[in-house]
Length: 154
Length: 194
Image (cartoon, rainbow over all chains, first blue to last red; front, top):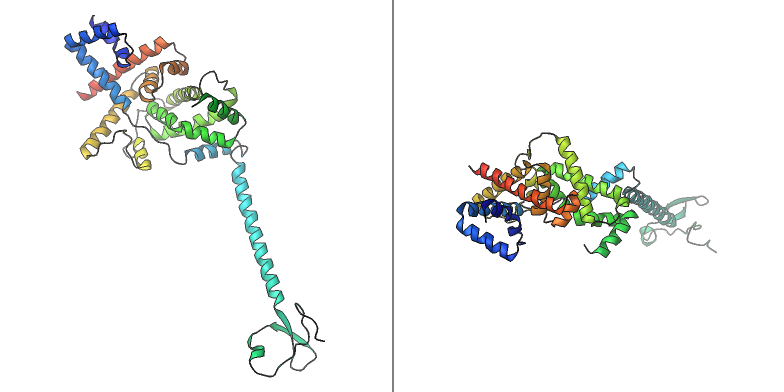
């Protein structure tokens, strides 16, 4: 086997695709030819070095970055709807929570308002219910009527 | 990927199913990004281009007929895009980013080196880093077609058949160009060591 022929077989030799007879022939040549052996070692080392190069890892938000780009370029037709939905969902949720909170406060405060007669009788005035009003031992005042949650005294 | 699973994924992609697109990106992001980085030698450019490749896949999925595998088809898009990007980048030197940016960022992001076998000692780390830079630079100096075939075969571990499909070259041409690419790279690395 001549040197050129031997070097042309390096690719198949490395891939282990050489027919057995040809492989023996090449190996015999490499044993007896220091130049070709050196060339083979350098060739093999080069391929091994390239194959050992590290893998570059994508960033964690890679998918989201692409989706955002598609969303922008398609004017929200693709990958834009979900964000809009999320935003509107959050907004509607917030408004509903505030609404129910206000409604609850309004109803709760209205239920506890009691109409208390003025000292002079006749007219009445509204005021909050206080726990000490009846328990204080002072002159007892009869409420003339209850506006909510009660009945007229008979 | 299993043929049946791939066919189902393609069907969902054609129906513009967002979850299918996420699955596609998650499945192919690493090989595509790694391929582009080794072709361009610049991490930020590679990342930007990888995004464009997946956008092109999303746009062109209706034209995918399933004659080749999905991965082969994606590589074909990526290799066309990388040629265009290289033209656009013009004669800018290969891998011009200073240390700390580019490939090194992968190490920062993931807490590991970009080298697959991480040396523990600082001198080994430096040696490995320098060797990687030298190989990457030598790859960048190869002719476009040689680089493409070398990266696909020796880094991405693609078969000769799929490389022939990606490049549109005959199998014999793929092998002879790969052989020439390896010899050229060996020469460049020898020159670098002197």
